[in-house]
Image (cartoon, rainbow, N blue to C red; front, side):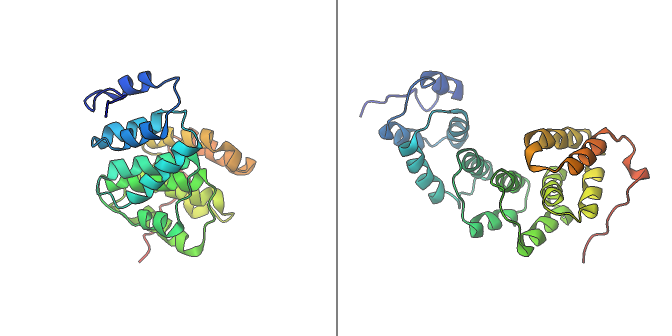
Amino acid sequence: MVKVFPSINANIQDLSTYVKNKSLKDVDVCEILSYKDKTFLGDFLLEYENFNRNNLAIIKEFIFLHFNDEDALFLSDLIDFSAKWGIKIPARIWMSFLRKRGEDEDYVVMSTIDYMIDNNLRINSQTVRLLEEIIYDNQCSIYAQMRAAFLLFIKFSRHRDYTNVLVLCCLDDTCRHLLENLLNIYCEKISEKKRSLLFNIIKMRQPLRYFVRIPKKS
């Protein structure tokens, strides 16, 4: 079979340029999904904008076959793709992603929380426990902890504890910028009162004068 795309050694810019204004046939999608370079494949899935319904059905099947992939960065790309294109991930699967721990696994946790926010998923008591475990688990990065606190903050009216977590995270400049980005992206999902509070948190420079650290749960 004659290859219709650049070689597997091509970079993502080459492939994106090649198909920029082209619709992909099903056979084309299958060929791309056969590439072994997961970084290349993940980048393409997130960069290409012209998938049609048939393309997405093929990719959805591929994604569901790779939810146990050991490459955490690739798995996070698949979750991001699902969020972007509205692919429904069963609750038992995305909840299992929230339990992952480890350096690269942190990307899976963060992508899963973004997926939950993007899809406005209902939060039950079990999900609250999983998100709070992320907040209190030192294996999780401050960026995952911020996302977990942010999701709980926008979902519940009793948000003082989650507000404290966001304030403490914002001691880190990168986290402050992240919170600002989250506020901009999900502005419509946040009440006016909470938007104002988040804006004030972002402006703070000495937040520990006003908030106290919440104790780690036993």
